[in-house]
Figure (cartoon, rainbow, N blue to C red):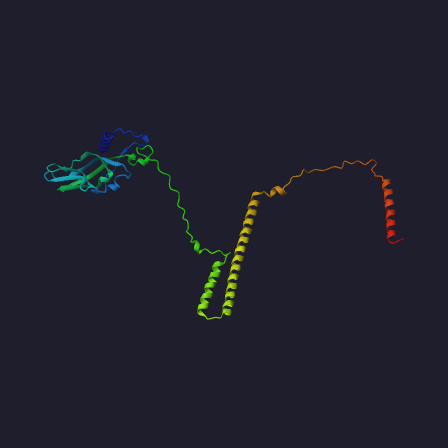
Length: 305
């Protein structure tokens, strides 16, 4: 019976809307708010989406009482914003017998969710309530927030997110020291000389010697700093060159330089000797003899023979 009442209430409350099908309002109903007792919190009964309005309160219960005893039953919800009650329905059972289940469907006219505070069932007089059942029907308008969907009335295209902030460290340029100039070192040495001169009474010659010694010490520190900088640059360049060679080796396939394919086989001799012998060259023999005669003459000239 209660399900039939819910269905009738939902059908009666379905109006026509101009929204597209994808963002049309939808309807629903809660479970039994009084399932765990005679008081309840609406936070645990109603769903959370914005744009939810309560249309109907449907409740049922069975009073247990003597017909002659005064007895009233009140189903109610507090007004969470303005105080008092947003909904209150009282049934007077005085002079009526108990044991008969009561069912009621009360339309409340689309009251926003924010107004519905804690609910309860209160009784006065003599009697008890059994099998209490309190159900709320509701409507949810997704376009309550226009940004829910681009098809909602009043939707505004969101702006792109701002670019991320880049934290830039502020550097006091007055504290920077250029090791190639050495002015800061010499200035510190000058301050040391002034302090020494104020504390000790030295002759001009002693002052000059001490000043030269401190300047030499300062220049030595400066040279070490420059040498360290040069070494750092040298090592950095060497590391960069090694990394570049590694990258080149990774790109070039060294196998192409050592892997070669040569057609194999047997190469046969194609020269054929007529008769099987090679005769001596007579002209060659004459040339060898004349060369020997010339060699002997040269030797004789050497020894003046």
